[in-house]
Every structure is written in structure tokens, then in C-alpha cells.
Image (cartoon, rainbow, N blue to C red; front, side, top):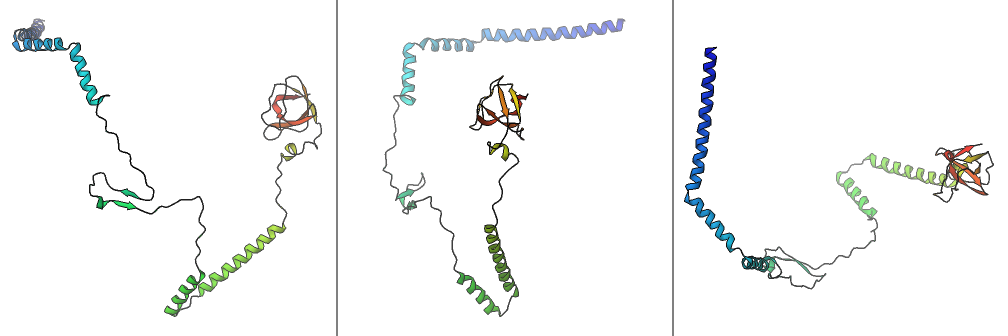
Length: 245
């Protein structure tokens, strides 16, 4: 126990010495600040500067700023130059020699007209083939086969075109065409009571009011719409807005 006590006493002595040394160092710094003449001169100069910043000094400073960057500053407006479409000179900003400039004298007018496809004379291909065969004195049988295939393909396209003209047009009817197309052929399937109000969004729809009775002319289609008659008017309405009686 004696050894541990002496050990604690030694540690406390070390901490006390460190504390005293830090306090002494801090006190020495404060003494230097109070006794140093440089700090006294600095505070005196700052006080003098603030004293001279009166109304006249502030006004003079604002006028100097306005003369450089404000409304009193010198303006350099760009000079107006007449624009000419036919003759335009292109040169770099740093180039002072006008001989290095590029002058555009051609004016291209763009229109919305689309140019037609370029046509190549057939003699060009025939001449090239003739020269090639005559120079090499060879005969390529594949050329005749290619021309023959092209002729057969063109004949097939012609026959198919005439067949399409003779055949009847394709039908555009859909499973829902009977429900949307001809309302006069529909007959009353049942009577239904309107559960909710509905305001038409399209011309082929009829308005609904809660509590009234409506004639249902067709079943609901794939989109959930029925055809009905109300006060002699036939149109579409949402199937979920009514209840069959």
C-alpha cells in the first residue's frame, strides 16, 4: 500500500508541475502584450484611420468607384457596320493583315424542295462491263444468272400487283364493331338503374344521372363500355355505372 501511495503522489506532483508551467507561460505572453510598444502603435494607427473615415471620405470613395465601374465610367459602344449578305469577310480577331482574310462571294439559297434521285445512264454500266470483258477476254456466267433472277423477280412483283388489284379489300371489322358501329340494329337486352352520375367526354356517349332508368342494348365490351338508349338517344356509357334490373 505504501508503494502505491507513493506512486500516486509522484503522479500528482507531475501533473501539478505541468499545470504551473502552463500558467506561467500564459502569464508571460500576457505581460509581453501589455509591455510591447508595437501593439500600442498598431492600436493608435487603427484609431486614427477610423477617425478619418468621415462623411467626406466615404463620398469621395463612392465617386471614385462610380468613375471606374459606375454610371460615370467611360463607355465604348461598338460601331455600327452595314451588313452585306453577298460579301462577307472571315478573319481572326488577332489578325491585323487584311490579306489573310477569307472573302465569301457565293450566296447559297436553301429551299424546301427535295432534289430528285440522281439518275445514272445505263450505258455507263454496259460500257464498264464491256471493257472489263474485252480486257481480260473472260466470260462470267454469273452475270447472266443475276440478270435472269432480276427479270423473274420483277415478273413476280407484277403478277402479285395485279392479283392484289383483283382481290377484295381486307375487312376492318373488329369484335367490338357491332357495338360501336350501327346502333340502329341493336335491340333492348335489359333495363338498368343508374348508380352514379356521368358526364359525357365524347360525342358518342350519353349522360347518366343517379336513379334514372336506361335501356341496355349490348353487353360490356373489352374496355367496359355498353351501348344504351335514353330518351330516344343511343350512345355509350360505362358498364360499371349501372345495375341491371
